[in-house]
Length: 149
Image: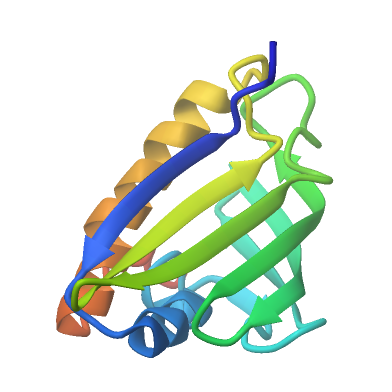
């Protein structure tokens, strides 16, 4: 049986280019606690969620207005036994225009039900995609995790 990677899709009232630009503006929808760059091929960035989650991503595929792929090159998930569960996974954004709407499909390849973090991580990803990235694309205002003081 094939392992089922976590995936979620949203439909937005924007062009593929607008969706693509928002996805790459990580601090506007995921977290303001970002070091590095998240705009173009081979950019690398590290995100921090307090002491709970730190991960480094490298943009390994960027097709303007169609696809963005991040390779997680390092991770420290401090709420599970294997703190490196994300390392080696890929975060994939696929963008499709259809009938004057744009669909964004988010997949974390390697985030599968067998992983200890699957339930928590998939729940939180769903919240970020639906409650932050979606409104960012539709209205220009996302709900990223605020910068740590």
